[in-house]
Image (cartoon, rainbow, N blue to C red; front, side, top):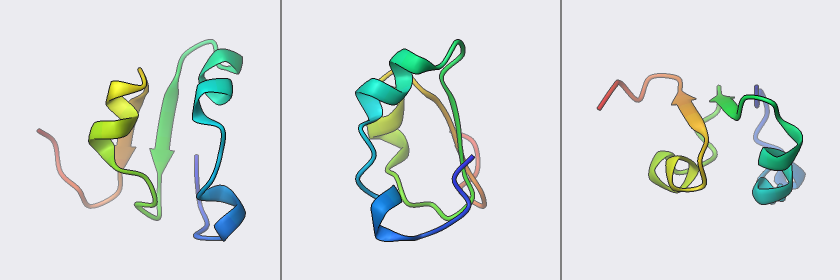
Length: 53
């Protein structure tokens, strides 16, 4: 769960993060990341207020 807009969290190594997670679920409470990019990387991504497509 990402709960901050701090710059150091905008540049996470998402490939490494996915490797470390048993289930690659990412909840973005600040809408920092692009949903299409996150899904392309293999995450089940939810951004607050973005709706469901």
